[in-house]
Image (cartoon, rainbow, N blue to C red; front, side, top):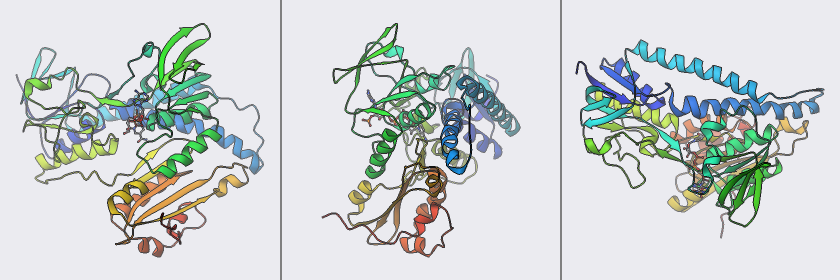
Length: 452
Ligand code: NDP
């Protein structure tokens, strides 16, 4: 054993890299163990490649809409393979940036799979690495249901690397990943069948937005099979035959499992160091991201708190601030803006109408639905939906929700106001920026009548 690190991070994803760099910037001696490519789920298998594919798909709509503005577009065609190759090139570039950022920060990278030996020691192959503190940031992995033929389907990992776009795809699951891939594939011309075990996608989001998204996706040609589960998949000459719990069979070229993710703890040997896990298999942590072992911390998806990249980054940096900058920092998990890059796009911050009503009782709901100006000449009949949820007692805006173009960009800005606890009156005092869609959020006048 040669080096004893101040901090040894396991996992080179967004959280691990951010926390390591922050700790090193305060003079800590930091090591980071990663078994594969640097960048983690978000950069290599999640947010970034997904968003690039969403951008790629958007051109199909833009070409359609352009006609209404006088454009003649002939012979437009899409090369899925070229898009994937371009995406991979970008991921290579980003991975290079991650590595050089770590180098510049003075973080020592160690390649291999980490296994805990005790509260201060990690094994990587034959090597033993010692550290004052350990931070586990190993993320999660996609799960697939345990049904016959499940292995014939793919996860989002493989969906991002398909060399050919499937003409017919079944997407199982109605969470973020399910609806985002339904948007990508359907917009680019695939026939999409989306299987939900509920009536609507995006459980937990504002109910009205769920209904509106569902309607818009149906109008865009996504074929939903609600309250249904696949029961078996078999391969035949004409494709994959998926038997559903309603007794029907659907034949497709690909099945995408978008049925959730689980914390990546396999082979970490957590028990050897005494690190406790939750019933769901996540590493149990307190508000400071401390595990049951005082020298070991865990951040990001492996802790199954809020599985979003910026949250993992914030948690990891908070650990670095607390340990190496004498700046005790705790992450607030209650007002987190999030977007679903479905078609149409959905953005949300704060409480849904249902959650706000349950928590605060008396609330006011301000909402508007309109056809975005950009769609009028294009002849597109999709409507934008915006909602503000306000605490009747204090006038504080508890939640802002939007379904429509640029929802992610608009909600990110509004998140400042919601996080700051601004009131509806302060929204009303804000001058509108005209003409924009976002101005509707500061011109909402009448609350809906309260439900009896
Ligand atoms: P989610 O947990 O969001 O959704 C899983 C979906 O699969 C739900 O609709 C769930 O139904 C359904 N499901 C679960 N098990 C089964 C089963 N056995 N059979 C049929 N359906 C099933 O997971 P995702 O995989 O979509 O995404 C994982 C996480 O990654 C997200 O929660 C999010 O935190 C993050 N993410 C964020 C993105 C973003 O910020 N834009 C993009 C992608 C991912 P039910 O509702 O009934 O439970």
